[in-house]
Image 1 (cartoon, rainbow, N blue to C red):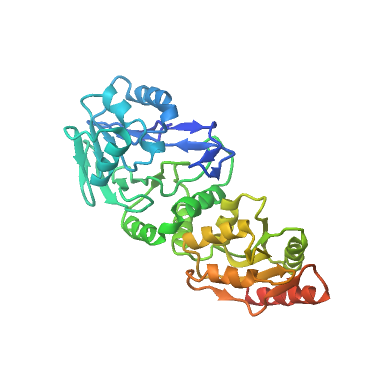
Image 2: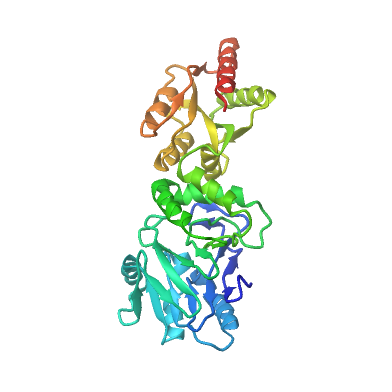
Length: 386
């Protein structure tokens, strides 16, 4: 794939993976992206997952057309991008590796050596002249590891963005960017919103025509759209108006309440995402909770606590800095309903949450009283909708 006159894509698609990072379902696979800049001196941008080393080297050698690379730039040390450093350095013994100081420390931890005699340590504001192209390095700590650098080429106006602006899905997957990029960002990067905001401020000073991430497609068209979404996600601002109803039910009564509330809101034209947390893709539910401006948590009381799957859901929200939303609570219990109190306590670390005046309490099964509570909650949510 030709990115520009001097830049080639040499990454790979992975359709063998079922769980990315051991937890995220990726039915359409993953891409591990790598690029080569062909100039007077040649720079290779990152490697790929260990399972695809042979294919990656084949792609690289095809792009080199008999030439020899001078540099390997390592922007991020997660093994899906760095696993072939040793392979590359053995294949090209005259090449040097370019990375941050923290990356070289990690290199020794992962791969047993840090190439002390062949390394170029770079940080914020450093440059690497290649000829026509000069690479400028921008520190991006905790986006989403501490060693990360991103790279800007002013000639082609390309930002090599490491894991920023990445998404789930192989490059040959026909799917919208927003949904899988949101699930990727919230799940993997979401805790580090302040650090992403700092990087976005630096990027705003650059003239960017294309973004080349380490996962997902090269972004060229409508860059303002992608930048806007990253501003929303990293600023913990709702992306759209809608209600997520996340439910944990034992015998179906709490689920029935969630369905009834969903029906009333949808009948009024409200966008609703309803999740049975015991059966759904949890990272997708978490991503939608960040996408929309309202969240309804519905749980049966369980061991004087909440049902385990809703506990996991709330923990995922709190860990990622959930904030600035309207939250409603629906609880069920037969002799001592406790779920609402527990759920609100679990969210104490989340800033800027506004709780509805109406909380629904179900005593074992729905009846006229609890249905009236659901109706009152629906009306309050609609009144608060942006």
